[in-house]
Length: 392
Image 1 (cartoon, one colour):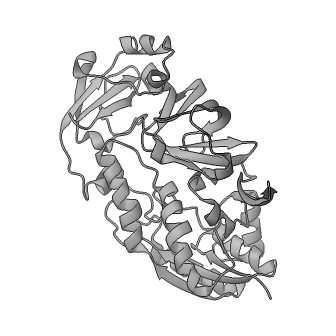
Image 2 (cartoon, rainbow, N blue to C red):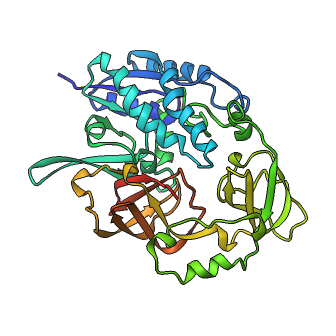
C-alpha cells in the first residue's frame, strides 16, 4: 500500500512541484491549503492575497489529480506568530515571523490539522533536505542545506525538532529553482509562472509601521547620530571579557548629536536605513541602536560605521535549541561551527561557548547588524544542528 503524504499546497510553484513529484514517486498525495490571515491592514495591495492563492492551489490539485482541502489556522497563527511579533517589537527586538511560522504553524498546527487524514508524512516546498542515520543505535534525522544556494531555506526551519523532522518530506530540496519552474512549465501547472510570495509569512508584503500600528502606538521621539570615534568602540575592541564582547553597544543622548525626530523607537531595527527621514548627510544614516524605554533611536553615518559591527552575541539558556539533540553542548564546552544570523547570509566562522548563563557566539570576523530577537543558526558540513534567539 502506498504511503500517504499531506502536502502543504500554498498555490505557489514550489509546493505545486513538490506535490507533483510525490505523486510521480507513487505516494498517495493529499493537498491541504492553510488560511492563516484575514486582516489586510498594512498589507500592500495585491501582494500575496490568500483568496487568490487558494484558487491556484485548487487548480493545481485538479491538474495533478489529488484531493484538495482547506483548513483555517488563523486563530492559532494570530496568537502564536503575530501577537508574539507585536510583543517583540514593543520590547525593541526584531522577531523573525517566518521561523516562528514554521515552528508554530506549518510544523505544528498544520501537522495536527493534517492528522485527520492519517498521513505517513507531511511535505512542504522548502529548499532543504533531510536524511536519516543510525548513530549509536539511535535513529537520527538530519536537516541539510538545499542544493540551490540562491534559494536555500534550512535557516527558516532552524527551530524544528527530531519529532517534526521524522514526519517531514522536502521533495524539491535537491533541485534548483530554475528546474522547479521547468517541471511546472513542462506539466502545465497553473502556478508555473506565479511570482514567489514576499514579506511576512502568510500575511504578505507589508508597510511595517502601518502594520505594527494595529497594536503599537506612534510616539514621537528623538534621533541621535553617534560619531565613528565614539569611545566605546575602542574599549570593546581591546576587551577580552566574553560577556563584554557579546553585549551590544549602549548609548545616551549625550554621546551623540541630535539630528531629527521619529514616530516610535519600536518601529526600527539594527541596520535599518529607510524611514529615518534625515537628510543633509555626506552618507546615509543607519540605525545602530534603539532605546524603547526612553524612545530614542541612535544612528551612525555610512554602511561601515563601527556601531553596526559586533564580535559576538548571546543566547539565553531557555532559548537554545538543538535539532541534533544528541550533540547538545555541556556548560564549559566550546565548539567551532559555521553560523548565520539571518536568511541569505553566507555562513560565518564562529566559536560557540556554553556557560551556565547562556550560549555565547564569538565570530572570527565582526558581524554587521546583529539584532536581538532574530535567530542565530549553527551548521557543520551542510547540516543545521541548532539555533537560538539572539538575546543581545
